[in-house]
Amino acid sequence: MAKEGVEITEETEHMIEKNGGKEQEKLLSAPGNKEMRAVVLTGFGGLNKLRVTKRAMPEPQEGEVKIRVKACGLNFLDLMVRQGNIDSPPKTPLVPGFECSGIVEAMGDNTKGFEIGDRVMAFVNYNAWAEVVCTPLEFVYKIPDDMTFPEAAAVPLNFVAAYMMLFEIANLREGMSVLVHSVGGAVGQAVVQLCSTIPNVTVFGTASLSKHEAIKDSVTHLFDRSADYVQEVKKISPDGVDIVLDCLCGENTGKGLGLLKPLGTYILYGSSNMVTGETKSFFSFAKSWWQVEKVNPIKLYEENKVISGFSLLNLLFKQGRGGLVKTVMQKLISLYNQKKIKPRVDSLWALEEVKEAMQRIHDRGNVGKLILDVEKSPTPLMANDSTETSEAGEEEEEHEDNNDNKERMPFIQ
Image (tube, rainbow, N blue to C red; front, side, top):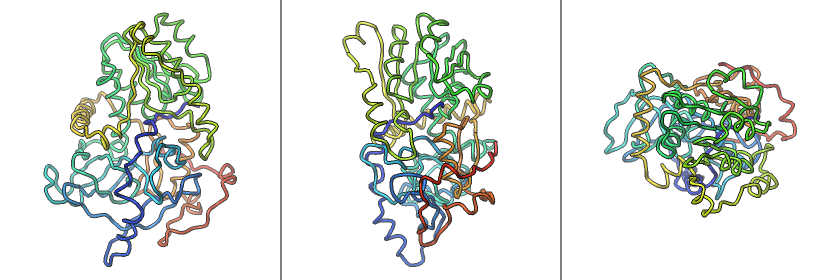
């Protein structure tokens, strides 16, 4: 099935240091602290490592904004974090999630530009899957009045990544061609919408057959992900394509480079081929790594090709390019106001349904974005799920081999 795009694994290297378990223990033990619901990852592994529990509600520090969360984005990267399928995994327990939308509830000292009650979307350095988050001012953006909270939660990671790859790195212009893998996923759907804002752009996309009917009108040429897409592309465009956006890695790296026209750009922004089962697989990791074609700089020079990588979270949290991201976000909001883009939401899930939501993204069943709706009540089916709210944060861990037998909830969208 088509694989959701994700930033490559190195981006989580140090992000959780200031939000580790010891600090949370101090918050919980402090008298008079308010509590909130949050999804907690108790350890790396399968779905049974996720639970909803009570946590101490954070308060904004200097330069931070406190947000009452309405919706959170769920990405393939979150699945890789859960598995520990990342470089230098952060310490558990932790609250996952990197993006959310909601209402400004309070502000720390020296925080200007927002007022209590403002509707916003934000990047968060972990901790997004909760009723309340605090995040630095530079990572918070006001949203249009007619943008829903689920739509807003679908913008930060996916649309910003898609925009920066297309326009900041690959310099998309009229008449160019783009190959995007996992075109039915949230990043893929953002890419095709942004391509439509430029005249005469040809989009080649790969996706599982089950998604073709839903996305066929958004892509110029759509191929089954299990087919030989290289030959299919060359039948239509013998010279290849100008841009390749690859969230898969492995053998697709060499195929993508081979499809580039002279002066074309290949961008790797994920490695979802490493994820096969519910837990981390060394075999899948080694296979994906082994299949990556070794890049010869001399060959790139001779063929006039460009190879690039892109990690949005690294750009924000490790490399200090928040100002550039803010400029991109302003452009995206302008495109939304002009009705040129509109985030595609696949389904809405309660916090207590996070295991079911994560299973859907693992199965690559989503078309567009999966959203955790903080105010949504779980369905009766989910009410008896093992992800139950617990003040103590303890619960019986279910056997992983029972997960495949569980019935799935109906989808909202």
